[in-house]
Structure formats: C-alpha cells, structure tokens
Length: 336
Image 1 (cartoon, rainbow, N blue to C red):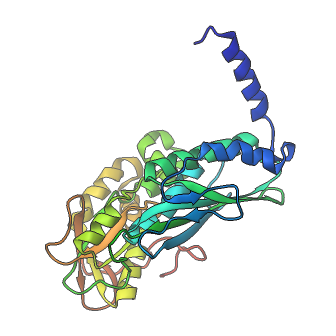
Image 2 (image 1 turned 120 degrees about the horizontal axis):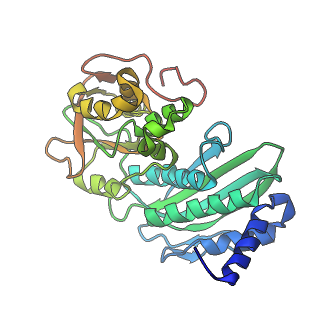
C-alpha cells in the first residue's frame, strides 16, 4: 500500500487512460506511446521513425521470417491477455530464426485492429512484445498500424537474423544413421490449451502458462548448428507433423522411440489423462522447442535423443505410423 497522494493521482490518470479505445487517439499519439517501450541494439543503424529500419548485416547474409496471429483463431481474449499474445508472437518468430541456426537481430511488428480495441490491450501487447524481445536478445525496429472492421484484430511479426559464421541448418539434410534429438519441452502448451478448453485451468497452472507464454531455448539453435546438426526446425504444429516435414524434405524416415517420450507423457497424465497426454506430446503444437537431427556422437549437451533417422519416408513411433499428426491451418486432421 502507498501513502502518496501523487501515486493515487497517477493511478486515477492511468485508469482513465485505460478506458480509452483506439478510436480515441490519433496514430501518431499511439506511436509516441508505443515506440519508447522498445529498446535498440548494435545491429540497428536506424530504428523506428523513417520509412524503413536500417540493420547492420555483419555476415553478408540475412535470415527473414514472419508469423501472424488472429483473434478468435489463434487466441481468445478470455484466455490470453495482450501481453500473452505479444509474448507468444515474439517466441514463434524468433524460434524460426533459431531453428535455422541463427541469431535474431530485429523485429517488425504489425497491428491491425478494430477501432474499438481497448487502448490498454495495445499497451499490454506492446509490453509483452518488448519483454519477450528482451528475453530473446533482440529488438523491435519498426512495424505498421491499420484499422480494421468490427471484431477484427490481427498481429504479426517479421523477424530478421544472422548466422554469425555458421551454415544455415535446413530441413533437408537428415541422413540415415543420424539421431533425432529435441531441446525443450513436449506437449505442455497443448495440455494447457486442453485445460483451458475444459475450464480446468487450476489443474495445471504451469501448463496453462506454457500455452500462453511458451519458452524456447533460442541459444541452442546456433549451438546445434556449430555441433553439426544436419536438419532442424521448431515444433510449432506438433512433433509428428514437424518431424514429418524433416522426413519429407530429406527423403528419409524419422522413427521416434516411445520409451524416450514416456517421461513427457507421464508429466502430463495427472492433468489431462493418459490418452490425451500422449496426444499432446505427439501432436500438440505451439511448443516451439527445437527438433534436430545429428550425426552419431554429435548431439550437444542440453539436447536429448528421441529417435533415429532411417531409410524410407515419413515419421513413425516405434515403427508404427499415426493417422493424426498435428495441427494444420486448413484441416488439422489431415496428414501434412
């Protein structure tokens, strides 16, 4: 508690500001509020304020990726705050840079929103982006704002990165005899979503947090590249679907070891039940852990082996195929 009258006055002012919507402010006023929240770095020559940002490219090559989230499709305001959305949007973009073996150097953020969107939601979203960018060791260098029809809210990020002297790790380099390894968790974000859908969030607060604010070991992307990873991606649409993408691009079969996944399943069983725990681990998306293949003996510390690369095609678990493999934006039950 505070005894300061000044604090009370500021609190009242903040409360008044919180009640406004985007329709109550001009674009420049919003930019003047949002942009000072973002930091800068040595990779940025010119940041927000000009027609484009100007980034320093030290390696002679640049990585670029983009991801979008849509209200009602990728999040619900009843389940996620603006800060949660901002955090997740940063994670899914920077994870893509890390999955190529890169380091993220800058982010462009876009907000397309109904004019009745609360100004406080935008402030919270900005805070989530700024905090997650700091955690990822990167910065916001610009973006775009646009109004939208009633009920519409879309956010997106374009991320840039560099390889810092390592070769890009593609999906297409896995070879028979390689080991399949993961760095990070499996199934926790999917289990959290299941608890929210069941209105049982109290049964697994840590799992719900993993759904709202997933965490990625970004630094392990370059570590894997230096260790000789032959293929890599981040798990955004499920272990089986994303592993299948490596298999298809490389012309091989990934065979996962069920005993290596047993502890991941057990960790979720109390919260969601055994059958659903297995489904979350094998097909759950939005985890953004890193999945890679390595030559035997090259798996770096912090990674755990969960399978092998074999001749053939597709992805199997203990030699068996699964019909449901993970999330698809235009038909989640389909095989990718």
